[in-house]
Image: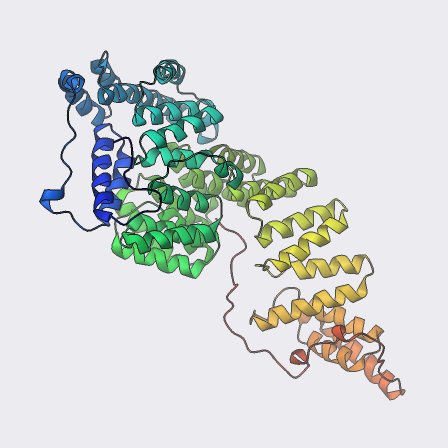
Length: 582
């Protein structure tokens, strides 16, 4: 099974695709690669069943397979019981590809298990990365000899790539995984490992990947990881149209993609639909809980946590969901405890490191937060939340140069996220680089300011620089924005905007506009007295016969919709998002 039969994007023969998936699912299971087997089986399940005559026959046995069959059968039973050293012992000297892979894979997993066992009791999860798998170097030497002799099949290449990645030999690992996808295009594990090593779109362009339908699933996945959400959603839509509409894997990936672009309502509805189709599913439920957290949906989050606890309380995702639940209840010590529990189960679980960093931030434990965020970045350099979290911790520590570096990294990963731009702007302001700060705030407004603060910050900068016309323009745009999308009028800075505009129009002798803004000021506690005083002054000047000035350029007049008697109607805001993504 060296080639995948159908060319890239060609799903014209879904029966052939199903046969290939069933074959590779069986081959993955024979080698103990449960996750790849599960992925292929789930995808095959989404396609129509095959008639008996078309079911793929079992793979033919070679002479070597026959010779190793007894040892392989015995060892596989030990392997399934997680007795890896015992399995490896009985597979020594086996020559067949299948038995050799299981021999090497047993040794690799034995090393991983010992590494985890060593750290579970003695160290907290923050030190976990310092313990190494002792078997890796030996495995690398043996596998590299086989690789040079061209004796590794697709599964062997995959294992060699994993060993190289664990030894931080990233460039060599990428080359080996690419080779593995050419030799065995249907093995999802190799594609997934490749996904984890690609850090940007440029790297993707230079990869020579096989022209197979599996590449479509890979590209959709990597686009989601690289925050290229539009491209990812297009890919997933084309896969659904090709015949995978029942695939729970694709549905969950689409929900994750909407979560990444903060389309929270859409993501929630897809996750709810997914739960109906696959009620005992645990994968991605931590992402679902992040959405419930952002929406402050306590009853739903509580139900999800209890439900997952009943299914399997010792799963990483379950611990993260419970952690989010306690965090929403402001029980941050308990939340951190559950994220630590998740990391004991899987120290490479990205979400738990980032969420634990957030909890330490809430507890004002900046050094532990920094450590947690750094671990998250070690696991995945593309995690913008960890870079952003590091920026926030250094901001608390009043170290703006460090802040700037981390916020820049977060912004590179999320160029259209206004929160990163506003954070960058604040940093530049602290460093007195006001031109750069202005650029950041303006860009944050241009990409769609989630928190509706960019224009206010820009206006205050213009105020500092005595650029009163630009400041007034920013405040007018800000007020228009707040009122047009029906934001609750008690938005923090609305009163500040009206106060500035009232004073600005007063200086410009535009009494009607100044009066309208002053009356608006009277609606807010912090500006009521100033508003009343200004109205008295305007009345006095009018009585003295002062006329309104007509020299000021048109754009600076208060819009008619905001005149004193015109109260905006309140609608539910489409942008009412919490500022923190867990």
